[in-house]
Length: 401
Ligand SMILES: Nc1ncnc2c1ncn2[C@@H]1O[C@H](COP(=O)(O)OP(=O)(O)O)[C@@H](O)[C@H]1O
Ligand SMILES: [Mg+2]
Image (cartoon, rainbow, N blue to C red; front, side):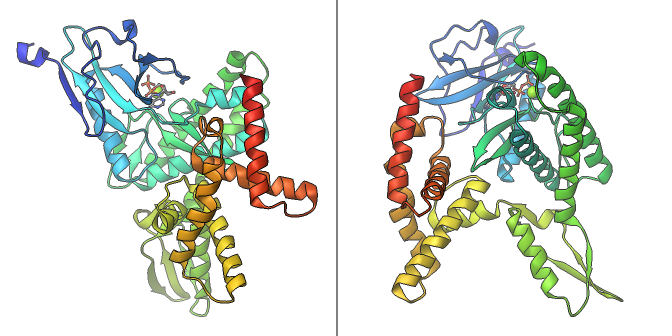
């Protein structure tokens, strides 16, 4: 190898540290640096460690240069396609004779590895929300033409999302990008996911040293069923009779409810009427997120956004009822953010926002409001719910501390 190729080479993206103060010439495993932090993580093949730059955490993964550069590119591409993936930040090469490259990704804040989820709770609800999130992630990746090749619970991170979970891809090393996937490629990817999930769930009971109340084979089969149901809903063809135009609206509404936008509908005349076809390329996830962002400027995950839009709709209906006249949506959105969302978040003690995003805390306050009101048999008011939620969080954190 030439001397030039041996020189340390860092490629990083603007808006992040340069990472020049880290001991790149030592094997990652042996680093004893003040920036190193311990973070709960899943298992994997490579050495993965985390560093802290003023509260922003980064994951460092040591792997051969070819794979590091490939994963960096794939993650960037998927992020540009608005896929839920960890953000790739850089690649470091030329670290010295026997050292592999290091891929730097931004640690996904508020993310939870599946083991931690199961350690806290192993119930039916977790199983269901986890499978829904993972199946949707796989469908989304497949819609964009990405063959994962290593879909597993360890290669996925989860974030709480208004009572459910959102799944993020963390390991793209084996992935391939295609213009679109054939049914055979999708089947292959699901078969791999199936096999990995069964293995991971079989190991889980042993690792947690307690029985886990779920059947690994049945759970993996359920993942496949959910994947197929979602894929079918998004892409199936149907024949619409000329007097059944409403069925087109129905289908689109159902897709919106599932969180997808449709950019284009193709109708082709057939003897019985029209064949409605949705090209996977024109079905885009993130319907509620996009609407919320457009209306309020707030970024949230899909279920959180759905929840916030429902709160906004109720707020708008109330104002319209009081004034007796329609209120433009953009005005209602502006006022909802200033009068409902921001005050709720501002009233939270810092403890409430340590482990949860603002959007998730807002969701929890709404849930709390609903439960309190149900218990009292009457609406206790949002302000009272906010006060009581804040108190509850402070008490819980005092107990824990
Ligand atoms: N950006 C990140 N944010 C949060 N956790 C991460 C990140 N990158 C890696 N991890 C954790 O490290 C584990 C291993 O990373 P992964 O990319 O799957 O490496 P391997 O190739 O060794 O399987 C993951 O399961 C995850 O828990
Ligand atoms: Mg992995």
